[in-house]
Length: 116
Length: 116
Length: 116
Length: 116
Image (cartoon, rainbow over all chains, first blue to last red; front, side):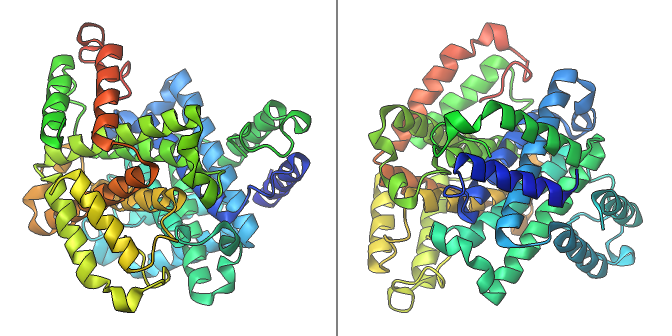
């Protein structure tokens, strides 16, 4: 199912429960942050190396996958409420980053490179 | 550009800059939370009603769109590093929510309804 | 119990469980963000007006108080690990904000006033 | 300056700028999360070991100290708006954790030990 279809399903989901009243961008952004916090909690005590293997544990992997799904659902809902094309916004930002962080200058340095 | 294509571009972006060493799931999850925080900051002083109109202001709208793009890029990168199909994870979670929060019982009540 | 005493109790708590190995500033910062996410979740579906009355509900109030305690504990632990005097850091930042946002210019405007 | 005195100064700060209208618990919680995100961003590309030495770099250390101050200010403001004694809430939660995670059972294990 694509982003558009998921956005449509989330719209129906809210309408069917009369939850549109609660789905302001402000509230959904808070819910997105709450789910992102749950995702962080899954990784907080792991070393960076252990975090690469988190999916190897069936239970931890299932929780991680569910958190990723939750974050994506709220992100899709927020973008839909704001009329933003999420994939296009990401592509535009990626192209900006590709220009801003040229491979030569930023090679191997995270200090100089906060974003992706 | 679809999620898969964006994930591929992000992979190249990291390889070209030798940033794979920094892109552990733990680090990317922190970056995702940092960007989510910037997104919240755009809405923190607005009323829920004002937040529905945030895109009407050209400058605030452009910042909001950029933050949504940033959050999506880190989410795609994180899912790709973990080998998780983001759209499928979202669809599965949505179906779980549809079952769990039946329209009859939860109609009009946010108290009883934490998730989407 | 003051901040110093709480910091000391948290140090003992970690030593007694041999958890110092997990208490890196990076990990504690993630835990702080995770708890902040839980705090947000308590308020996400409330209107700003309802959020002013959240303590009136015994159950919601108890959860809110516990989340505030959790966030403060991780904040104290993080500052202690970094050797930062939390109260002094806050006082210095407050004085900076008092200078930066003079009452005359910023009166009644949140647009012009992101911070406290 | 103690927590009570800082809370009083923040009250005056808001009154002098007529910002009480913006300082709902919901809005302050969002600001707290936003500042926590900035704090995470300071540590996201560091290894856990590097994060222990973040204060050794003058510039990074100053940013870290400022972020800790920002987070504490919003936390104090939020607790004050809700009438919660922050230190007491933390002490109560710490005692709960001391009971819940007895040193014998949880020694050396983060898996079994999500909280502090």
